[in-house]
Image (cartoon, rainbow, N blue to C red; front, side, top):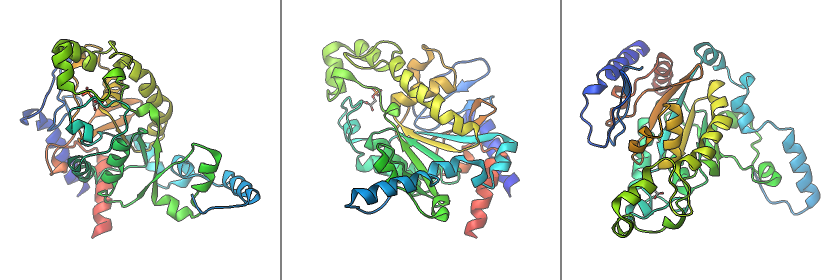
Length: 345
Ligand SMILES: O=C(O)[C@H](O)COP(=O)(O)O
């Protein structure tokens, strides 16, 4: 069964180059075609609780909590996870990248950047659809930006996951917040997925363009100027961040916080934004500052990478509802899926 899924997936990956794509795409690299589109993208040929009035009580809660293992410790510690042995053997981990679903300002065609606006109804639906597409892929840790549109996307997507673990937002903004969000059941912790929200995954800060209409801005300053602000690597919009500046925090965060999790065999989902993800993909795929110009990400389309021995291998994203035919599963992912099937039947 697992082998069948595996073979089917490999077959799909080999034929991906023949799919019709409806969105934007780019081609470059020797022997490799990268397609980033609404439809799919793949490399071809590469393969806490209660209110305490007494401050005394409050302090003791904090002290008690410091001796508790946190949810992140549970996920990160090898001794807490039986399947960790097989992870070590295969030395691989899944990495899912997902740009948030459509936001209310995407719908209005406004520059959004770090302005914190929620999803539209369509964005909610996109997030749920994205969740269906990744419902068979293991997820041990979730990282999102500090912005609600990315957090909504991650949470809505997780409502669809077959493993039925519960995403739990980590609150480390203060000692008190950490203490008050402790879970006191090891079993419950094991059925939870830590969600770490960090501003360094935020959308690029769009400076004085935030809140302006994209079309009106192009009419006023010229299409080329606006394209340069939106897509060039090193030209920042007025008083905003260039992609390069955005990369300095987003990629640094990825390297410091996320990559060690992947290297430890943890399967990670990142829900973030067009430009913070473009900068991370630039790092993962070793794109040049020229190549990244034509890299476009659609809202709500999950991309799958495999992290193996310090390398990142793109394994596609789905063209349609039949996700098994479009993600190039590894044997390990196929086995995970088989286990999920067995849990249901
Ligand atoms: O912040 C925004 O306005 C968008 O979500 C991303 O903008 P872009 O398409 O100009 O990169």
